[in-house]
Amino acid sequence: MSRPPALSVRGLTRIFDVSPPWLNRVLEGAPKRKLRAVDTLDFDVPDGGCLSRVGESGCGKPTVARLVTGLVTPTDGTPAFGTASDGRRYAAQMIFQDPGQPRTACHRVEDENGAPAGETETVPAV
Image (tube, rainbow, N blue to C red; front, side, top):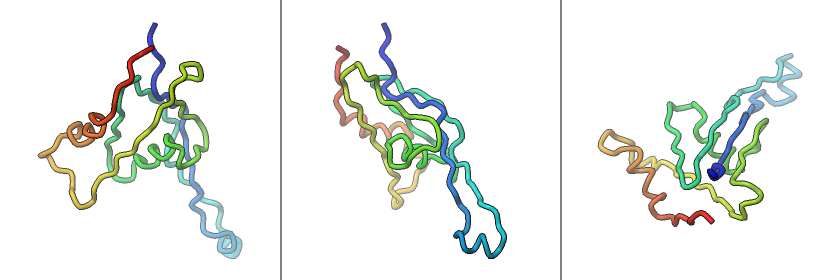
């Protein structure tokens, strides 16, 4: 029997209200403005696995990390860690880029982002 994923994300969506302040909207007759930062994202991270999001500036990488770790509330969808019956607690970790050390072709993404994964302990399946 296969184990459930450590993290399962279904329909994750986040819409931000980027409207001007209420009084400005009333005086200018401007409508509310919404920004869809994350649109119906689905993915699984297998037990013992790791997820690294790589993409262009402004594509929502930090927003997804904040949604998954609970720092930001999703507009829709849910991130679920493990199952209610497996008795284990899962933790999520965000690895921030050091602005003083830019990414270069000299380093592979898995080398830079894999270092914290090597510092953790894998719990054997029960």
